[in-house]
Length: 98
Length: 130
Image 1 (spheres, chains in turn yellow, purple):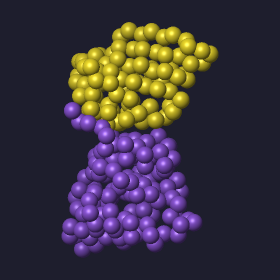
Image 2 (tube, helix red, strand yellow):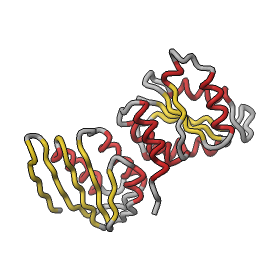
Image 3 (cartoon, helix red, strand yellow):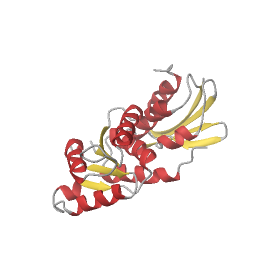
Image 4 (tube, helix red, strand yellow):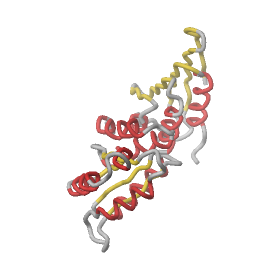
């Protein structure tokens, strides 16, 4: 996993993390990612996998990435509490199958 | 939390969709209103009305119909609600049935309001599977 963060202005940060999926990013984890995104309206979360891009707020777009176990996903989080929000998203992606 | 009512001609379809949606959007309040009172394919305003009561916690209810008479039954029921009371809290989504339900339930489970939940359902028509 790699991480970088860069402050834009006070309190607003962009965090990028590359993670290797611990499971297929199918319906249930996509729902968990979108629920987490919905809980943080002041933060923009984008996932990129295999050349496709999805706003994490859209559960259907996240499923539409078609990202499978072992593939790399780039998570970009911008806004308030970007560090903490990126931790939350990475934890969901790296958690083994329920 | 905004409640969601899935209206289908088939009780199996409505209940199966509600079960799947509940798995994807844990914590959401999703109620099935499928089939007729005597267990046939069709829609029943009584069943929809009961489902609205079961889904309503005071934050509003979004109705998601499958096709045809599901839409008409929901519209006729909405026309009978008091516009100053329940009518304000119940909305009908123009959305794909399952995809709209999943998107709406994720938004609802995060505590978003009725207008935002309805918008999430309606935006679902734009998301591609491939």
